[in-house]
Each structure stands twice: as structure tokens, then as C-alpha cells.
Amino acid sequence: MHQAYKKVRNEVTKKVKNAKAKHFIHCFEKTTNNPQEMWKTINKLINKKSKTTIISEIKTENGSFTDPKEITNVLNEYFCNIGYNLAEKLEST
Image (cartoon, rainbow, N blue to C red; front, side):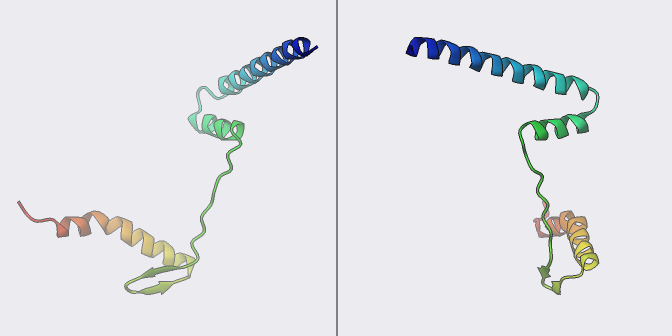
């Protein structure tokens, strides 16, 4: 009785694996020429949820900012000047 159960269980497992493989291949074939759609498909297949981080406040040496436009400007200024600011701290050779 147990042997029959194991045999059927193994057959079902193989069929499920094959069905999943065929499904994945079919999904990827539809997105071959579009990397963006391919990544959406991959995330959908692995059930990955996208995460959105909302910044409600940012603190700098110039104060605290909560307005979305001010936060955007602070981040933009920081990332636009980061190379220059780091270069200033390097010793000249």
C-alpha cells in the first residue's frame, strides 16, 4: 500500500514540475525581446511584491524638510554634489 502511494506521489510531483517548467518557458518566450516585461514576468512568477519607500521628512544640517518638493530638491542637490564634495576631501597628489 505504501509503495503504491509513493509511486503515485512521485508521478504527480514529476507532472507538477514539468507543468511549471512549461509554463515558465511559455512566459519567457512571450517576453524575449522586452527586458522590462521579462523582469515583470520574473517578479510575478516568484511572487515578489514591489516596495515603495515614501520619505515624509528629511533632516540636513540646514534644517528639516517635509514638503515633497523641498525633499526632492535636497536629495537632488546632495546627489549632484556628492562627487565634488568627496573630491574636496581628498589630498592632492
